[in-house]
Image (cartoon, rainbow, N blue to C red; front, side):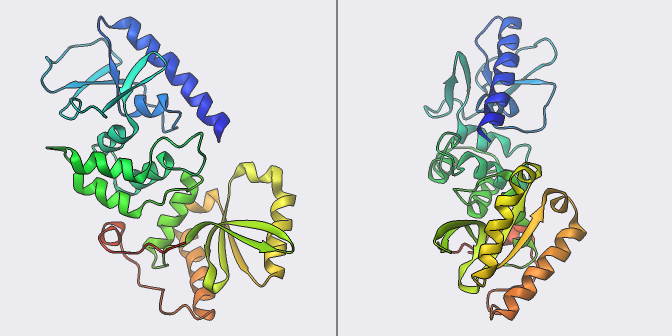
Length: 281
């Protein structure tokens, strides 16, 4: 994950320096350009997004540079420096991306910014929430706050965020993430778990093929310790029907373990974000 982040950041530093050479003022980079400078990978937009205060005169710029106005740039915590480039701060970028993201994508962004890796962590949920709450005339405030209610600091990857949101939409309770337990004299960590029911869920991406043996040994040890662990692969996350089948399996295990009181009917994320579905570690 760190190597990918550094690669993304290096690419965007070059793109931003190219943009700086093409304009006659110091630009402030925003949206996906700001995320890229922070090493956060999203789908590459060929346009280069910069931002100015709504009090500034709108500038016509050469393509592919696109200028946006935003009324939050006057705040002291709205802009940071990454190397020699100015860009919107992590919290400001989160709020600004609400213009373009839906609830699921914005929740995943909050997870990425508050991830478990201290080197890659760009913000905290507290900082993100403070920026949103204190922003006057901030559009999409409601969307931001609902995304923060669904987010879980300490998540390891966007794919694990996507898995968590997929199971929540289908009526499963909020799991404990990065759950540690002692099995066979060793500390084992599950991506997600319902500890009281001894049920775990594991995301496996393509990089897991290189550590397949270690993963098998870990899952075998958990099985021997009377845990039921349900793996999910990346391709399954992009298929609604595959996730329906996966969640039915986990739901059956929860019910068999006595979890009828925690399993609910499917609900959309907007409704879930309006309630209290978080579980304590």
